[in-house]
Image 1 (cartoon, rainbow, N blue to C red):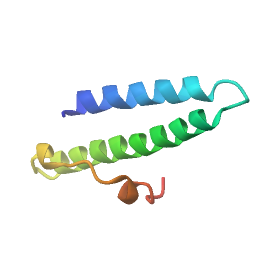
Image 2: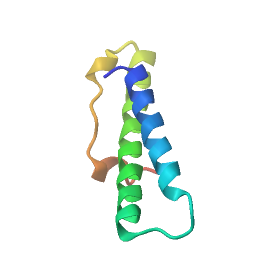
Image 3: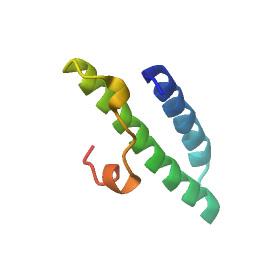
Amino acid sequence: MDEKDIMGRIHELVEEEHKLREGTEHTDDQRARIQELEKHLDQAWDLLRQRRAKRQYDENPDEAQERPESTVESYLQ
């Protein structure tokens, strides 16, 4: 997956999240999906940052790998 694909994925996830957050009343399923989207977004942003860092330091960005939710979820924003 290249940066263009990652950015496209991020855009899709953000769009879905915004649609789910519209309104004031959310079902349990909607809240669960929002949490899932947040985790996937964290992973996508992390992968994008890894690729950019590798490129900056003349490493192969294709060696960047998606990290588990449990790893990226605890990062400070």
